[in-house]
Image (cartoon, rainbow, N blue to C red):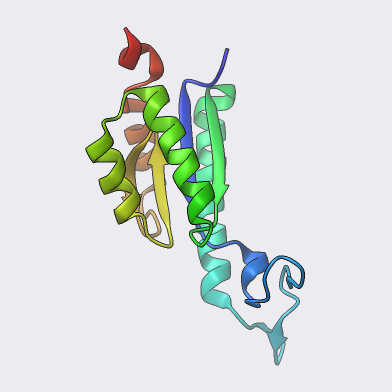
Length: 140
């Protein structure tokens, strides 16, 4: 049996900060200037989405399937969104609107866009995800 919730966390991958593609990534806090991370804003996004990930795991355990996708991976993101739209009964129009509105940071649950940007209230976001129609509601 598969997960009741499918969540796509969209955030830039830390390893892409160098802009060098798949073969020359610089990961972690390797890039620094005078002992400070060179891309602190990217690190803040990674950490904020990490708190969302941990809160989802704590709240739903094995009932949630979580995919973390870089917004520059449009094909992968579109594939996951279309897959979830089919699984959870989201219409074509809403799927296209969701795909066109996803930004550099977003949270999509069961094919529905729930948050754009860095979530400010993780508990409210987890509660909203818990209220999103699941496959049982979509098919039954």
